[in-house]
Image 1 (tube, rainbow, N blue to C red):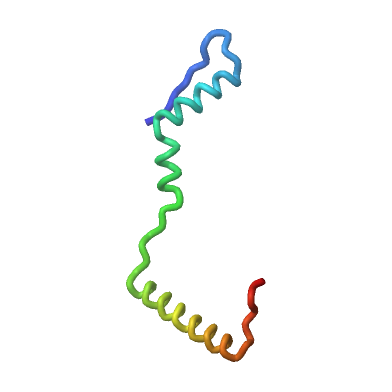
Image 2 (cartoon, one colour; image 1 turned 90 degrees about the horizontal axis):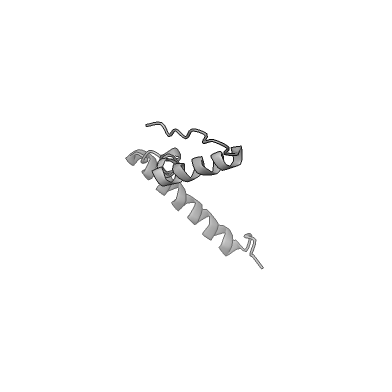
Length: 75
């Protein structure tokens, strides 16, 4: 599905570009491309489990350092 815009008589290049971008937006092609461009695969069960364990370890380490007073506080 190609989008084709031909130059009309006495039409400037800027007018042609403006008309092309308008047709592109109306067709929804740009929207579909941007939607699928950064699509991520769902993480596997093993990867989700590892990430959860890593979060728990980090949380415990932070709490331990917090109790010892070795964490930086934001002002």
